[in-house]
Length: 123
Image (tube, rainbow, N blue to C red; front, top):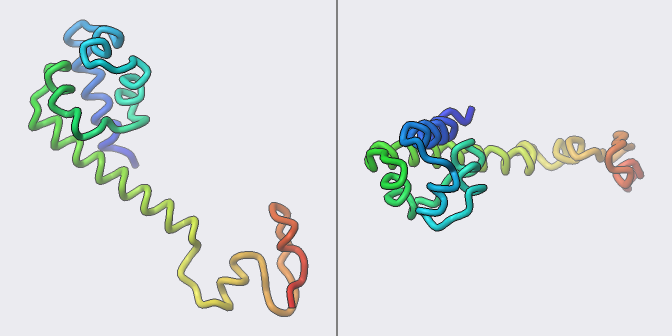
């Protein structure tokens, strides 16, 4: 999981180290804060697509390679976001089964220690 996102971060970190530049130097050249670069290099966040050319110039990376890796990482991130949204909504169950899933049933209740309001019997 997050293979391409980490690959992009590693690519940036390795290129910066090979150029013998510090985070502060690269950040200053790009006009951003060094903590943003740390997030990009660690794979915590993806850089904006509009900055790919500038990143390629400052890190000395082939822009085409960087853009391809970026697009794979962005697709991976978008897939994760979609997956998280589907988990929050719960499975696509019929209404009666969805009520059991959420901690409610018609003829009694299912104990839910995380949300005591769901412990009341609703009729």
